Image (cartoon, rainbow, N blue to C red):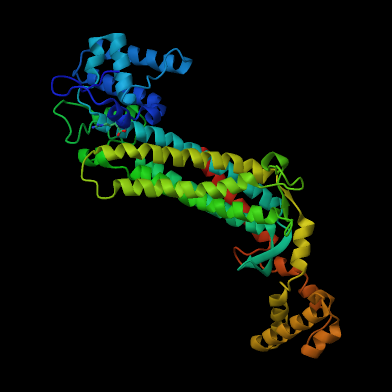
Amino acid sequence: MAKLWEGDLHSQLDSFADNFNSSIRFDSRMAQEDIRGSMAHAAMLGAQGIISARDADAIRKGLEGILADLASGALTVDPTAEDIHSFVEGELTARVGDAGKRLHTARSRNDQVALDLRMYLRTQADEIVSLTAALLKTVKDRAVEHAETIMPGYTHLQRGQPIVFGHLLMAYAMMLTRDIGRFRDARARMNRSPLGSGALAGTTYPIDRAATATALGFDGPTVNSIDGVSDRDFCLELCGAAAILMMHLSRFAEEIILWSSWEFRFVELSDAYTTGSSIMPQKKNSDMAELCRGKTGRVYGDLMALLTVMKGLPLAYNKDMQEDKEAVFDSMDTVRACLQVFEPMVRTMTVRADNMRQAAATGFINATDLADYMVKKGLPFRDAYRATGDLVALCMKRGVTLEQLPLEEYRRACPLLDEALFDEISLETCVARRLSQGGTAPESVREQAALVEEFLKDVSDIH
Ligand code: ARG
């Protein structure tokens, strides 16, 4: 396809360089946005008397035809075009003649590509918010379902204190609420139209930037034309939000992988989200969770790639910036795919409450509660801590749990103790008592879930 800029001043490009320079492979996914942007631009040019009403009308009809033909498959994007912008303009001119050649009046590909990208990524941000909200809802539902399922809570991967599984799930729910917040913030900041910035300096034509901004659903135009064409913060913010979201998924994935192992057996993933081994028939591998964990690396990579491309770039547009698309598209595609597989994986996961309970019963995770009870009975905390430590050592020697140790042993360590201690150190009591705000008590978990329900209502009102 002939270049927009070919002529006496510039003859043909070397064919390898031509291919090297082309972005059509990855920017054709912005065809719809490019066409809609051009429609708004042409309508504005017509309304302002910059082009005739007849030309504006011919352009609109021509672009509508291209949009419809691309959708039906009657038209396919020419892979030899330089980029999607050249392709659409070339196709338009082939269809409507001279009017098509007037479309690019008072515009540059620099403001055009910045516009298309913002429009495309706006939709991506909305989709990621919806997918994250779906995962959040599932995590919250499962947390309510397991508001009383006792398991060991870990620090340093060592059994620490008893918690309920719902409380742990709600920790992930909180991360997802922040992820949604980040994507919504980025979307709000990005929703300004750069169209009309021209190549970098604005234009001498009497354009109406507010009109095109409104027509395309933006909150208004960008303020400075140089910034309008050279800003890629919106891509970076999305890649940053994506990297943090993936970090959360990778932690969740890691726990799911660990919990599914024979050593834990806390959960079992549905066959729909595990694979078998080609050689070891007993295996059920958590491939989906592992892939989400692994893909976190490439989403970090996309962020680093884009930060590095932008670093030290002089104003305004430089061709380096064409490298923005593959990074941000890959980041968005990867996050969407991970969210899509994660939600049903968590929804269909079987929770082995009995194994969790059994793991919680061993490991002396109620030792803190025993010490607290001694304190309540009047012993200073340091003494209680010491006495509890001795009792744990005794249990370990005998191979029993604190619950199984007879009362006389307790009384020998602390004469203030009585029969009631067994109820005090039961795991159910241990979790039910942790009623401090944000604690692991089942009641607290239900309160957290109610807050997330409110949050989700707000998200669906906007989307
Ligand atoms: N394909 C280019 C990009 O993605 C479009 C903008 C071209 N502008 C230019 N001055 N060459 O960045």
